[in-house]
Length: 498
Ligand SMILES: *[C@@H]1O[C@H](CO)[C@@H](O)[C@H](O)[C@H]1NC(C)=O
Ligand SMILES: *[C@@H]1O[C@H](CO)[C@@H](O)[C@H](O)[C@H]1NC(C)=O
Ligand SMILES: *[C@@H]1O[C@H](CO)[C@@H](O)[C@H](O)[C@H]1NC(C)=O
Ligand SMILES: *[C@@H]1O[C@H](CO)[C@@H](O)[C@H](O)[C@H]1NC(C)=O
Image 1: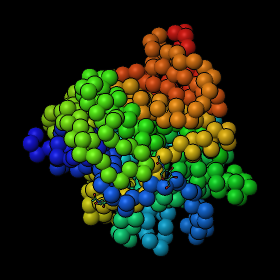
Image 2 (image 1 turned 135 degrees about the vertical axis):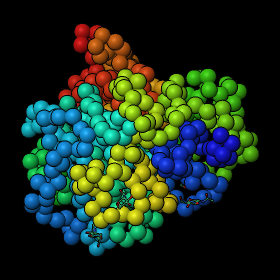
Image 3 (image 1 turned 30 degrees about the vertical axis):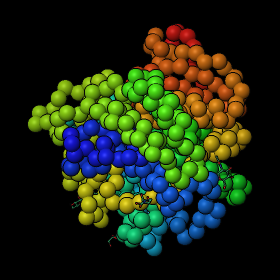
């Protein structure tokens, strides 16, 4: 534990490290965001552009390609060790830049039933640098979870493909199986490049799966995808407007425990630490008084750094992504599979997924790593060395979506301390919206699933009770109920008769 690097960081916001470090599983989601903030808030580090996001106005048409015949090639017969299922699965690469040799990997789980009528839902994980296959597909909302021996899969009966056709994308290049043959591309990674490549991916993917072109389309994601989701949505709106036609039939966005506004995200985090008994009230006051979380802050006082370091120490021996949850105390896979449980999420799941997705037979079955990359598959990228741009806020994008009639839902697992519900609430307060439906509990199966408030405009905020940062991992039933209501456009139920 002495070697835990998290304790050494004397920078505000770097409190995101979990106690458990691993060589084998490389970088994990619990570290990626801290690394970015460390760079962003480093004294006078002006190398990360934090100005407002602007859509890429011209996307070279040479990046769009005919996709005939590629869909059938991408069909996955079955994943090694999977139980029998009725829905179809696809996986493969979409080239987003032919001259650089850059391609993004996707996994697509069609709906368990009514795939012709249910919407298309894209899921993105954040990081930056974390894989939607590792977290979204294999640990959160996908149809399967991995047994603790890394050998086989079991069903997730609350998979989101009961509500939609769900597409998981590993982005940007350098994450998971996504790659570039021009490895200097990795140094250019940032929000802009991610949005542009995601957009090019999507238009090409819809060409490959033309039956989904006119389908209602939604984008969802968590954590740093609070940047990716709105930035992709903004890019879609921009190009639909420019072309005066619907290139992508975007209807709404859903983001959870999302990084949306640095200043309120930071204040909300320390407030949460304080009122969840993780740091003292004096410490909260000291941090709020001495730290400057505004986008223009270039340096912090010694008082701020000392207070932030102390707060980091107090929170470093719990998993702040799920403050009441257990830690993974035994790294790696187990010799025999443990009895799986959907209700008690296993904090060592990263290791099981790492073992499974690095198996050559699995990679072959899912059409991944076809170019025999020289690095292994990691839950969060080890090969993206830096991040070039990260706007200090994406609130103007949310306002744009509301003005354009898109459905905008923000949700918060209420036991996440990293991007907690307080951060999201403070960010919403910045928007000065009028309340349409007052705060009330929402229910699923006779219990309170969380609390919700709807704003005029329309924006829905909802908490998910007892869920950490990765909401569908910790509360799969409540998460599925939430996404169903989001996709149906129906308010979360204020009665137990559901
Ligand atoms: C990357 O290079 C490999 C080996 O030359 C090639 O097979 C592959 O098609 C290239 N990838 C892209 C996206 O062009
Ligand atoms: C930050 O700087 C920009 C541009 O210099 C300025 O417009 C803005 O008001 C500043 N914001 C704060 C919070 O000081
Ligand atoms: C790709 O395959 C090679 C050769 O089997 C392997 O060494 C490497 O770890 C794999 N990389 C990824 C990203 O799966
Ligand atoms: C500044 O940010 C860049 C980009 O992430 C990073 O490579 C560099 O190490 C940072 N510099 C300092 C002093 O932290």
